[in-house]
Each structure stands twice: as C-alpha cells, then as structure tokens.
Length: 242
Image (spheres, rainbow, N blue to C red):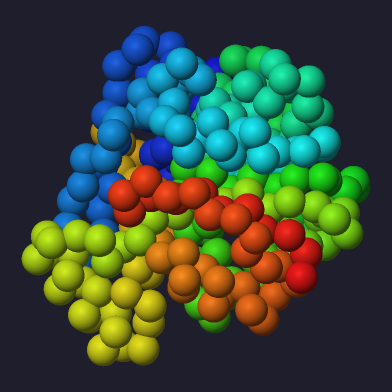
C-alpha cells in the first residue's frame, strides 16, 4: 500500500487494523479532551455484529447508493452483497485503499460538499456512523445537504445517523456544551482531530444533534425528516425531498 500522508491518521489506523488486526484510535477535542472511542474494529464489523440501527439504515437504502464517508466500507460491502450499486466517497487515502482491498467496487476521493459534481444521480445517500456530523455546523448544514440533494434523484432517501449530545451526565461534555452555547453554537458541535502513532489528522468541525434539532436544521434545505428510530442517545433518520 502507498505511503500515506502524515495527516491521514484515520487511514493509517484502518490500514494497520486491516493488515495486522491491531490498531487504536485517539480523538482529540479542541478543549484538550482525549477520547478512545470504540476502536478501529467498529469500522470493520460485519452485519452479524451490528446493532438494530445499522440494520434499519441498510434496509432503508434504495437503488444506487452513495455512501458518504465510507471509510473501510462496512456498509458498502453489505449493500453490494444485497445487490445495490454503491459508490463510496471519502477523503482518507488509507481508508479508501482498504475499502478497495476489501472489495468495495467504486470508491472515490470526494468531499461531501462536492457530491453534487459526481457524474451520476443516486437513489439513496447514506451518512452512517454518526456521519450526519459531516455537516459540521448549523451554518454549513444547508450547503452540505444541498449538495446531497444535487447528487440524488427527486424522490431519493437520505439515511443519516447521529446522536443526542445532551443525553450525558459527564461534566466534561456538559461544560463543552455550555461553552458552545455561550459562543452561539449548537451544544453538539465539536472541533476534533484523529491521532494515531505519528499521524495527526486535520482539525475539523463535526456536529451531533438530537432528532428535533435535525428537523429544525433541515427546514431550510431540500429535505424533510420522515422517520426516526432511536436507541438511547443514538438514532437513524430517513429524510426525503421536501
């Protein structure tokens, strides 16, 4: 596999786990908080290991699927197995290389904001693994969701997962939420980067929202929320053109 840029921490982690079965993930927040999430194995889980929300999301997929932030391809591979044509997009060279090596047939380097420039229309856009967060902020959400409307058909489904950030009693998160509110931001907006060994990812904004907040955010976009399934703070939503 090609040498990765030192900013591709996520891709280096995926590559090592794919090749050696061992890696770790560190997510750094801009207030200095360090988190060790589920670990790289979560990006390689098979349907037998999925929770109900992942299964619901895949069931909601229709036709030609755009998998936004596909990573090493856990959802794309299952959808291919079910007979869907799937195009995965990502910005991590390492993760894309792993996805191709695992059998994802169409993986492209593309930012979600540029999805409308892809040379085809999709029946479903997926933003799974909490990837609704790629909208980044309330201010940027209309641009991202507009790009996905441009990339999809007039009766498409947008299937997006997120989590309610307020369903926590951890003071370190509650303090962060309050700092966001004081600065005019939604509480679940986070500025983070991934670190792995010598690799350090770029800082980027990510947005966690409660279902009602998602409904408010999409009011000024081409989409409307038509269904939600929730387990604890986590949920998956189906959106249709408004």
